[in-house]
Length: 244
Image 1: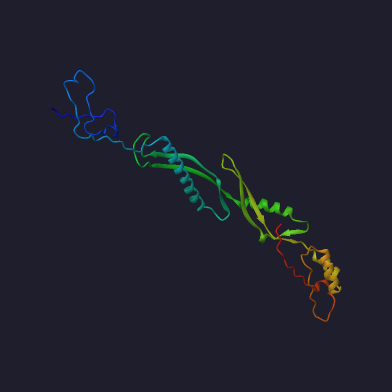
Image 2: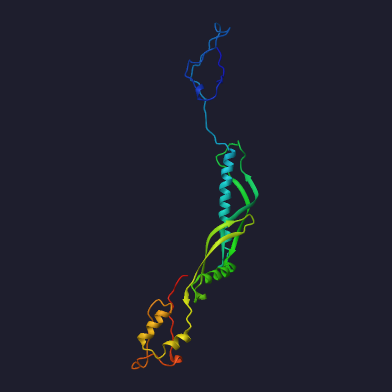
């Protein structure tokens, strides 16, 4: 009688058989040797381990690259002036300066890390020069005998339309301002001088681009006509905002 160690031909838990189930295959020794396993067989096992694949590396690289672009955008935005904006569509990775994975494809690990540095370029657009062109276009769109108050002009960057390979940005710039009619007061005052207030107000409302009937106040109150001398008439123009 002898005890020997045996190893299952196939790995895994299938080799963990019960007692008295191991026998000797048919051979010339079948009649001379008896084989028994007095105890259950143990030690066969199968465990799952994680290993790196090329797909894992590609996904991690894409995530890190997206993160670097977001960091670059934030950093660039802090350096802009009040008249500049960063065209997000212009952000591009110009070069990957360092790319180092902690594990190669096929290596076993529960955690894959990546060290990456990259050069990211973006275009900061100044609206100052574009504003001059937009203002000229704005003044061309207002009705005749109307002017835009310069202090009312507001510019707002609109949609980015295109970014070429050199980073040149084509974008919309929205301009808003208050337009007021240009009134030639000298001839108007000459016409209404000496008129009754009701007649003068009707004439002004009919002849001028006014949003409401004008108001005429005469002093002294007992004088019921517009002064006969135009230079004694004081004009106060109230501006009602209008977006051209």
